[in-house]
Image (cartoon, rainbow, N blue to C red; front, side):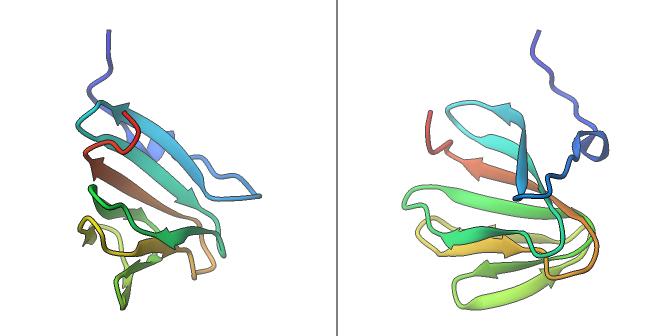
Amino acid sequence: MPEYFFDTEAEADYAPDKMKKINLYKSPRLFCDVYCLLPGQAQKEHAHAENDKIYHQLSGTAEVCIGEERRTLRPGEVAVAPAGVVHGVRNTSRAPASLLVVMAPHPRL
């Protein structure tokens, strides 16, 4: 039976070598991941031609780039990267950070 309810805090897991992505749910319509970044870790800036992405800060803080703008997200804050706009995330703090990330449609299914 598929899982429909998730504890994002319990799912968070960090890796010393690079940002870790933990998939919670995926379908052809979207994916939902928890991104876990230790200090200094980042998701390289990139764009998706046909996919929108949402970053929701769960814990810690992270700098999110969307287009030319950069902002530090705090827990509870959200950033939206529309299709075709360059985006990425970096943990510029001294503490671990986690974000809930949703993208639609799923780029690979």
